[in-house]
Picture 1 (cartoon, helix red, strand yellow):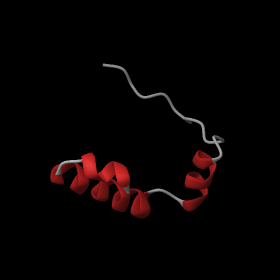
Picture 2 (tube, rainbow, N blue to C red):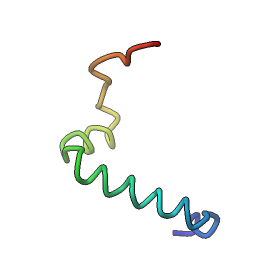
Picture 3 (cartoon, rainbow, N blue to C red):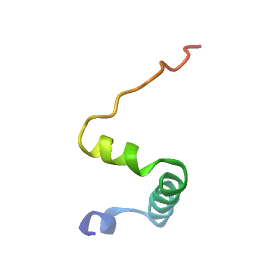
Length: 48
């Protein structure tokens, strides 16, 4: 992709690592909902 030209090798590696994590850990149904802006946060993160 064109914007990848502006990324450092470390940023490209991080982008790939995140993509692989999402494929492994996030359901296809949730990804489709996120694409359609239908996904909502189900629980609030704890505050420290």
